[in-house]
Image (cartoon, rainbow, N blue to C red; front, side, top):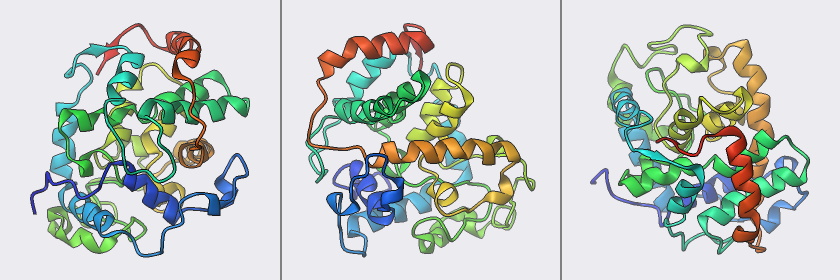
Length: 288
């Protein structure tokens, strides 16, 4: 199958599947019962399975290293945060069963829920920008190179990663230097020394890394690393700082997953607040 193929109806179908896997109400900051969210049958949709087959096949160490080079900040110009949110808004999603909201409205629902709970301003801003890396889709990156649960490359794949049965199709699986517990890494080396599978999380982290607090950067970089922050995998690659910072990743996760509703935020009413918030942390334009 062509690795550029799009098995998902939209990239948000991946998030639908995450909610199917992790519907617990104890991760819901608003107390909304899990039955009010997606309630799919246990077997994953065939499109989701095919998405992960592609993801697990093609997310190799060489692929990740190439994308890290291709998407060094600045390679795609200088743009403001708000203009990139509007650019992302051109990515149309007709498949999400929970909401008819635009991309920017989804970002605002996340950040407004964070604001309503009284979190710091940097936390609110993180909610607004955390998914802006999905602009990769608009630069013709395949779905499996934009979304999906993330995982380390360059070492043995954990069976806690969703659909681990597809990893034998990955060339790295058959490389004896890469298919060991530590692979190219050292015990407790720290996640900052680990190459993660490529996608919107890693890209947005690289764009924002010079501007936000460390806690925010962990939220952005690892919010899709479900094997670690929900399943406890890959602890042997972490150091004590990672373990401390993952408390913030877990604090952020419910706002990412469980804040969609049918009440659309009024973008133009909220825009002045968010432009002021963005200006507090970012210059007018940054490198993308």
